[in-house]
Length: 416
Ligand SMILES: Cc1cc2nc3c(=O)[nH]c(=O)nc-3n(C[C@H](O)[C@H](O)[C@H](O)COP(=O)(O)OP(=O)(O)OC[C@H]3O[C@@H](n4cnc5c(N)ncnc54)[C@H](O)[C@@H]3O)c2cc1C
Image (cartoon, rainbow, N blue to C red; front, side):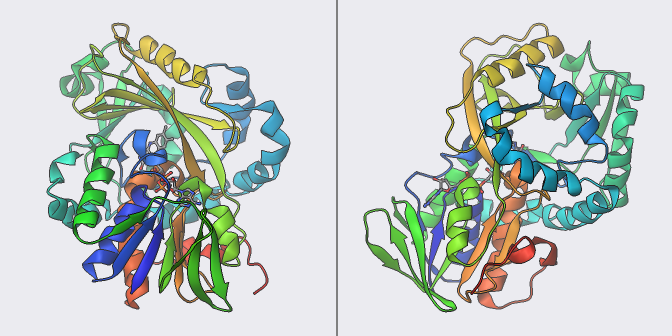
């Protein structure tokens, strides 16, 4: 089959790589190159343990404090508040304990095989070295402070995530530069990280092109369908790309095109920021999640990356790099010797659905259209398994993961 893959982020590129293994002909449609949007600057954590939704029980109580704190992990631009309120209300409904258990179970199934799903792709690309597997440390100021997250950690354990307790000595034996602020930690030994997420996506994309994938550097403006069949992808120059099928993987920009497939998907952008420091004067050997500060810290080939924060301001508002500076201020509290010389600041759009789960599946009203978007905070982790599962669906094979929780029409189906 000749398939258009819309989007050259991690999800589109992984999906194309899996589809190429089945012998399909691929044309990427994207005005941008690989990993130039959200997949460029994420924290690169590859975490089978990251199965909890963003909305957790009781979280709403902390929101006012976060909103009042300029350096806090959450901001909502006032002008955007009315627009995002209905989405936030839905988001909160998914933070009930029963919902969190359901979501975590489904996400664990999607994320657990992450390394198995990357491995054959990276091996073919000769890029296995772009993934590290030495675990991730969740760190806290004290054991007492960690108690607030106990429920979630217990849930992770119940779903098979290994978490090893580390007292201060054990923590510092692993990572001496955590000395000072952190006195307690949990090591997730099965986690890993990308040494540079953009390089990883580019390597897979380059291999896909070597394996025959074409790339039309154009924006898809509409998915053209007749009845229950997609016939082509309309491009911004007015031309139509005729294909046998389409995979929609346009990250935070996917909702409008999903509408052409008869789906109304409440996709929101949670804008996140990073600061990458080429000479940080801090030495870490694995990814560290400073849980109380909500900052992910990853020693990458491109420097030490501090990433996090959630900002609701929509797709069009310009970045507010003050948010990335706030990450650096927090970083200096954690690591007093942090050297920020040569810092690079970045903002990206996390594609988020209110239940913190992506859409993965076939369009219910269109037999030759598949969707893979909405991976939120875990697209680097979920992209490879999403690609494998979409390839199974396209081939008509049984999936290896129960995709029912990720079905595209779980929010709303428009009229056929
Ligand atoms: C600060 C931060 C830290 C993060 N940390 C992590 C982490 O540690 N681990 C993790 O797993 N995830 C992390 N994430 C999330 C992860 O980066 C995203 O989930 C993931 O990159 C989304 O990938 P994607 O392919 O869906 O979208 P993107 O990478 O955004 O790609 C979408 C592509 O679609 C294209 N496109 C859009 N509209 C159209 C159109 N109309 N026609 C054609 N093409 C179009 C765009 O040009 C873009 O290339 C983080 C995100 C942020 C912001």
